[in-house]
Amino acid sequence: MERRLLIFLYAIIFINVPCIGFSQARMDIIFYTISPRGVNEIDISKDSLCVKICYDFTEKKEILSKSRIVNSRTDGEYNYFSCKNVYNKYETDTGSRVSYFIFKRSSDNQFQLVGEILPFDTVENSNHKVDFTSKFYFTGYSPELMKSFHNYRNITSLDSNEIKNFVTIYTKRVVAETDKIKNTKTGDRYGTSVARELYNRTMIELKIDPTVRQDVLLSTIQKYIN
Image 1: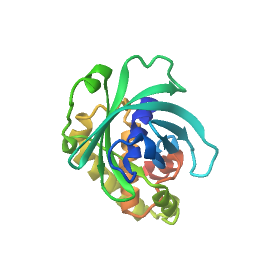
Image 2 (image 1 turned 90 degrees about the vertical axis):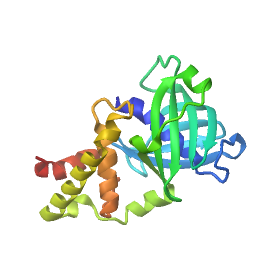
Image 3 (image 1 turned 135 degrees about the vertical axis):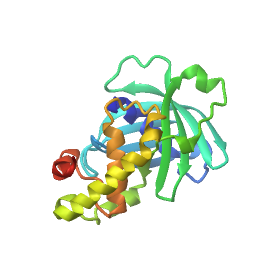
Image 4 (image 1 turned 30 degrees about the vertical axis):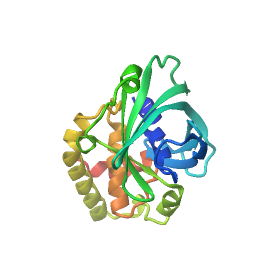
């Protein structure tokens, strides 16, 4: 489910702090993701995180979930941590489920992250490892990068040939990522968030603003998708 995916997608982004490991005292940062629902703000403070749906970068924010960071470790270029949900607007029974994440820094302004749902005991009582390269990752963005996206072209300004080129590149991404998608428990039952991630990567590559609303994006390209 997309809502469940959002919970574990955003937690990982707190790693972009001066101390790459887990540090409760120094954690105070905001990052963003772009999902089918819109722009989402992740507010990290000490050992907790709050996910807010913005719908737009400047609109009023609505709290989706709050979580507690329960475990974290670093292994080479990767950071692992688990986060237990304590509030979710759309769920009342979270049981013993936790979100388990792998983080890799791709640049100062972007992060690649993998998230999977595991039993709490699995995360707490073992050094569970996952091959990052075999998993499908989602991307998080710094506030500076989010602001820069508004200098990109709007997808509605593209002509038919440019839209066709966009669809061609997107389709190649889908084919290239199929095995990784199948190998990752994204929690995205209908594939909408996975598709949006691949759309986002394509738009950024082509200097198109990825913060475009989902309905506008789909209506613009739908007639060129076979």
